[in-house]
Image 1 (cartoon, rainbow, N blue to C red):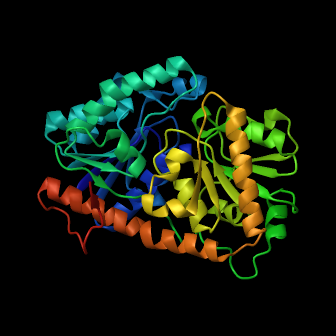
Image 2: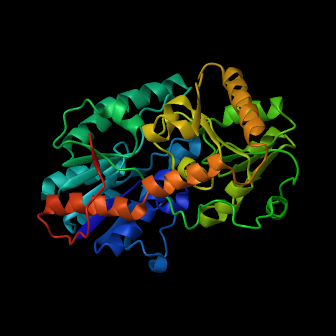
Length: 398
């Protein structure tokens, strides 16, 4: 089965959606699919030996991300033509998220050539602080996201949060919920003999005191302004920020903030293991992969209250905080109170009973192999049984 997997960026962009898509491309290839990954040329495609299948870099402008921090690459006529040809050459189209214009073009091409579309919806609405961006987001959801979801042959939601936002639409088929997987061979509890101080020293971090970790893009929706206020208010805490983006935390001039921009993938695992608390004061999320990775490493997690309900069965393992978009200081204070509570409860231990429970939950509930099997089963049904699917898929009907 020839599967066209489409995203706005390749995984070198280092956003959650692209990283998920890259892992899924590899798993689908192992399951027998002939995968072509289409994304804009704003970032470099994976190498041929990376196991992601064939890649199609589409010519596009990335000015909205560069100027506004909004990842929305704009394909031109040449790029649209490349998308059109790639869809025509496929048996099934697997789109990751609805708002990207490259995916809109792919949907139009799929309707023209009669190719079934599976649309994976990762995020709900993003409540930007800028009223213009917030209004544009609402308009885009109404005029683009909802029609795209209705037009898809099968919609997949990756979290309960996104289900609640879009679940009442009329769909071609009943949507399903498939959680993203986590590589628990990489993201795991600190190994026996793990030396937290040595690990921190190797990463250029202070060896003493609590380490608070954030992993993600440095953009508004991830709550960087909240982290800045939190770091200013709590100089005794060390904050490690792993990521990149238009916001530069180094410009805050805070000695307790350390930026690690080169870590990604497996190289993040020791940083998770060496931290005391993982924080994610973001809005408009589904179930962020970095949150799942932190749990896999046994770390306590504090995030926005909406994100904390993305997987209802995991709610007891995640601390939720109400994000007040109009009062960053209030939100920072709420995160500080949660951090203090966790630090007092877990007292800097690398592995606790709670940590083992978090890791065990991830192992049981977030499997890339099972996720790929579920996607293969869906696409096999849509294209008439061309895929050889082994075992039973683990989708949750909504």
